[in-house]
Amino acid sequence: QSLFSQTYDFLRDTTRRYVNWDHFFTVLEKYFLEFQQPHAEAYGSYVTAPYPTLPPGAPMGLQLLPEDVNVLQAMLALIAAVVRWLPQTLRIAVAQSPTWRPLDGLFKLLTCPIPPQLKASLLLAIRMFAMEPALAQKVCFVHFSFISFRKINKLNENRFGNIWTRCN
Image (tube, rainbow, N blue to C red; front, side):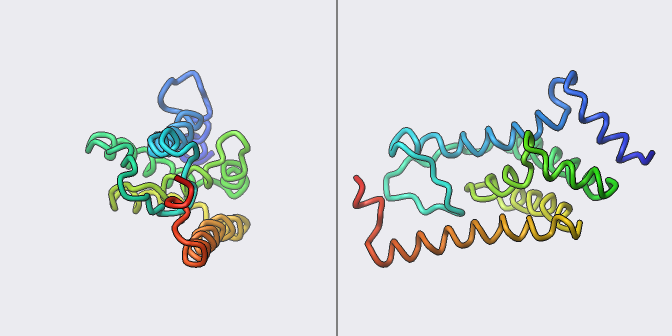
């Protein structure tokens, strides 16, 4: 058994409070929701469009501390390294886990206003999943779903005016 398969097994053990797959992917989701919370409180909904353009005066949301960025980068580097060297069956299992939903979590956090170095770490982790031919199509689908959603929002904004202004 390879070192990375052993690491995968080690990370499956949820008795380790902060060092396991469940915790890693829960953290990504929590950061995403934290970035969205001020908007949800102000407007009653979360912004799910990639790179959302908030209306003037909208709450800015979470600002990451340098320590948070470092911890997230380390976590993402571990995810990327393990995923890269896992056997195909385990890599696919991680990507398709209904509990973890790693690609959704990675892409969601990528849509938030975060430092460029953290976006690079997210993209590297996504790339490691996309290197698997069986997963490349899913990665592209998730990516293009975000792009299409953004384009539709832009078209509607151009056609009907800024939705934020009209709804408030």
